[in-house]
Image 1 (cartoon, helix red, strand yellow):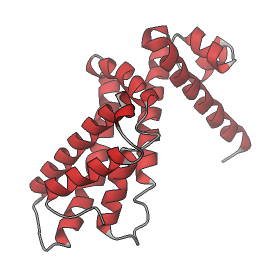
Image 2 (tube, helix red, strand yellow):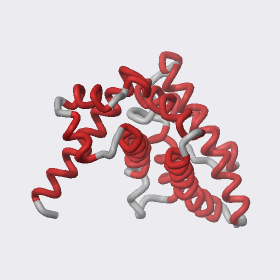
Image 3 (cartoon, helix red, strand yellow):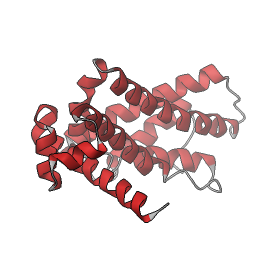
Length: 205
C-alpha cells in the first residue's frame, strides 16, 4: 500500500472515530457534518472529500463500531491449536468483558439502532453483524458437542447459536447499563455457566 493511500485510510478512520465520539456526546441528530468536523479538528470540506454526507458517515461509523466489537471477540478464538471448548469459552468471555461491555458501546448501539429500521443500508450492516456472530458460534458449538460424541444437524447448531447469542446480548446489555451489579469477571462467568447449561456440557474448564 502506498504512503498516500495509507494516510488516506488513516484519515478516514480518524473521521469515523470523531463521528463515534460526536454521537456519544451529541446523539445521532446532533452529529452533523459540521459538528463532526469540530470533533475531528478539520474542515467540512475534508469530511466531504471522504464521505458524500452525513448518511454515509453514519453508516461507516456504525460498521466501524460493529467491527471493533467483533475484532475484540475474534482475537480470542484465532488460535486453532486451542481446544475447541476453550475457544468457545474465550469467545463468550470476550463478548462479556470490556471494551465490548461498556456504557459507551451500548450508548452508541442504542443511537444507531432506530436507523436500522428505516434505512436499508443500516439494516444490512446490522444483519451482517448478526450473521457474523452466528458464523463464529455455530462451528464452535458443532465441534464442542462432537467432542462429547453428540453430532447435531445444521438446524440444531443454528438454534444453539441463536440461544447463545440471545444470552450474550442480554448479559451485555445488563452489564453495560448496570455494571455496578457485577464484580470483575462475574458477567463473563455467568455467560459461560448459562452456555454450559444450554449446551449441556462443561465449558468452565
